[in-house]
Image (cartoon, rainbow over all chains, first blue to last red; front, side, top):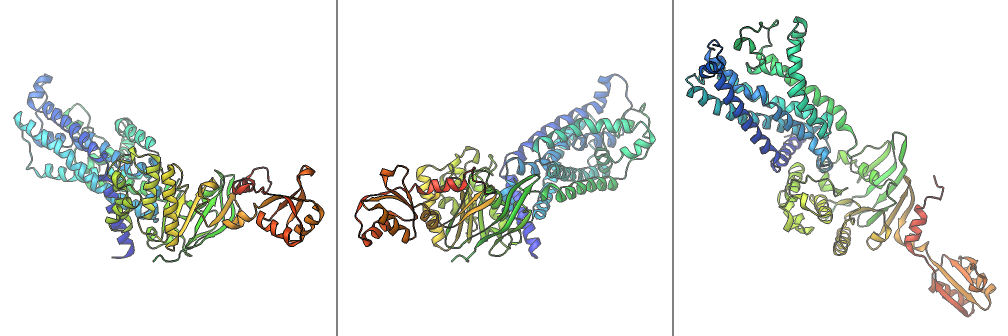
Length: 283
Length: 303
């Protein structure tokens, strides 16, 4: 191995050790699995015939695959805030507790530190995907079955969604790292993460969908790109749930295009951080 | 056996916006010696040490470890160990986990974490979260981090701060032993008396400029001052002046002469050799601390 590869391997091991020696990683996982289980269970109930009858509107029966993907995609519909937050904390905790000093004393090549954190962000992000799917599939599928619907677990479309969910959570964790490394302030990062995922982006997506030109741009918003990547999402699937909603004026991105949008955005944030905040004096 | 590793700072300057924190700072901490880097808070000690360890970037000048800048060192923790603050630990992580993560990053065997915890007297608290540590314990953990790579040189910012009297005694003994093994020890303090018993060399910084650089004994020599009197005061003054001392009458004429640059023993010898009987001889040296305070006092317009 070259010296750089050795340094990167050592730093990655160190970054994993740092993450695993704190409680926050599994606390975030616990919040995620409970949140997703409740969301997926509820969604499975309301998308089933039983739920539809309760609504009393006589909603049309949904394609079982569409219902199942909507239920299983709860991870990316509402749970991405967790890997995003994890990635942001991975960077900002070093500033918040000033541990960046010992970190860069042990590894003065700061690019190696950031690259190692990127590896940790991707792996832990995928792990949050697994944890989220335990919630969405683990609860959603039995609820669907119990209400007489198909869990559709053997459908290729569903299997593809499950696998691409792992890619989505990994990339959102990387996005968080880029955001955290650029902002450095833990409070600012948390505020931005919560405000953007819970408020700003959903509103932007709905507004953007109103006109053809803005819809073309709106496809590149991270949440929209994620729906394209995994192949389902509440906002992008409104048409199939409620036929009165007009069909989207613009075609959604292809799944790999959605993935590239997320990866590209993460890369831009990381490069910007490497060129600015990472070069600053460590205080 | 440590590799002789001088820590050299050359013509360093650092400007933060409008504020000049360091101007033209040069000194070298030598292997096998404890060098005290002294000055009031805000004089530029921490800035200098952070530049030396590659954490901050100098506006001009160089800082090297055995001729190599920190960021270019091959295995930095094995060459120089640094502890710049007792406030660089995650409160939720144990001291042992902190050290083991650093060991992983630096390619140091994990067993060193336990060895250095033992060495600094923290073995009993190693598995506890740092959030529950006292300032003294965090100082010890900082020192353990610095010692992790068994380095040839140590850079410690205010290492005595927060230690109890036993801890201070222990720290002095440890730093002495490390220097005696041939390591370079550079430590900062804003109180000379705190490190007076430990240091061999002294570098004094004030307003970002070096105002003294030399062995502690040179700083001490400047403090010698005696008051002396004899029946033949004129002859005594002449003899002392001939020996190279600065002789002035005391503030009150009845109190004899004040001699700077000679200690009491030497003054007595000169009087004896000149055949003058003394009627008074007392040591009036006001100690290192006041020399240090005079060096770093604000009203002296050195800048």
